[in-house]
Length: 126
Image (tube, rainbow, N blue to C red; front, side, top):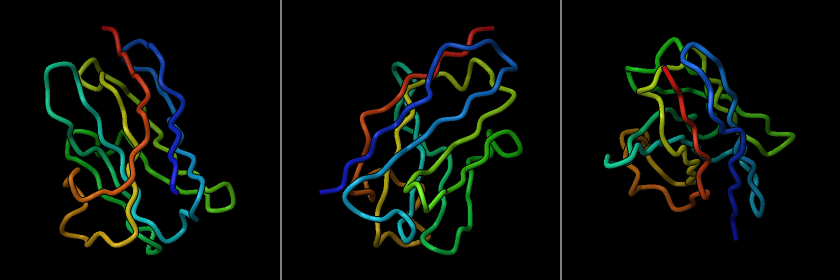
């Protein structure tokens, strides 16, 4: 049984930085594709970033490129999302998702991920 636990979300001001963490238990993260999604009130869940399997290659939605960085610490079985220059548009619940068999062309599709965390709230005030 894989469990994902996110942490690090909080209320910040525009321009601030935050680091979110996603810690896994039950299975090693090192070969998984791990992604961050977010969902703002009244909106659909959207892809934010992913780190693909053991390649370590990373992928981002256009609006966060250059501001967000996804990384993995295999020793801690944890994936991070470092966020900087936050704007109110970054507000939402951030979810960590993982899958061990997903293909590259599907990493932006939430329905392709088998395991999800409970989410952590990020609120960015202007």
